[in-house]
Image 1 (tube, one colour):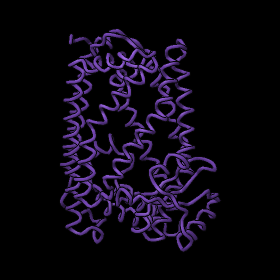
Image 2 (tube, one colour):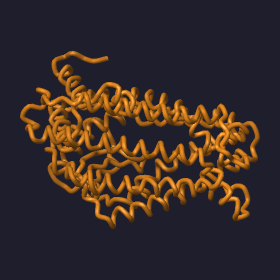
Image 3 (cartoon, one colour):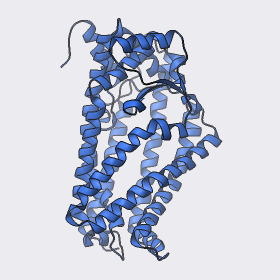
Length: 420
């Protein structure tokens, strides 16, 4: 394959991205401290703390192996003309351009899934199993794969077909129409997720009557928050990790607690976690983040429109035919640096949102700061969280602040030192 400017740029992006990931991972490993932070004295014992650090080492090393294999295979696939081979295979069926494009992207997605499968199996059944997190059975794992594939075909296929058609038929304003179609798709999925998509993977049940439900109802009433439903989810079906979240909009809105959370936290701590999640809702974090995502989507489609059917880009991948559908795939390589910068910005906003939601919980609950701190500690111990991540790792990869930083901010709030 002849070397051109686009190919050199893409290879550079891939290699530099890998080197950045390697650097961050090594810095994160070096930041592991054998000394238990004073805030966690009496919460972590020496054995648990050592185990949490070993978990960070194991997952980090595994991610580096995965990244290394991914880089090598991607470079070999590009340089060997793999994309052209898949395109010729898809064109061999003699279908119109849009079905051919769906077949092309589907084959690439299937190839990626097959190559990723061994890593997913090892992560779930070796690493997560070793550290006591995994509760996924092989049957559930396989069923999840097929359900995910079915959703990708049922939801992603029609959206891709619309995007292909719009770019082929709508002229210079196609990117605007693609943006509008994608926004409509995202909003519909947001509404349907709690009632149609999530129940495909987990069982949801109304929270049982009792002390916890009464405490939640009282708190919601104090905040003039109309509860549409409080549910528990069988998170223990796949993992021992604990979580809680809001999902959906309007009458489809749900508050969801993992069943594992119910087993690990006290009533006051669970209500504090709920107050944090409600803080996101009350402070408009959810629609703001959604709006930012929509703006990012518009930028993506606009820049994409500038590279459609670019001869130099197709030459970089050794393609014999130029097409809209392959343009979308190849543009993903060019967009990677912008995507990284966007992710950093999103993470900054998200971390600030977490601090604000913590403050909301602390201010709207009696002893809210202490209950939330206690809950955060228990969840950190339960999830073997890294208590001392490197700042560069946090900047690039973390949507939540480190738990110690969150606790310090809550302590300052307790003493009247209000953060900005």
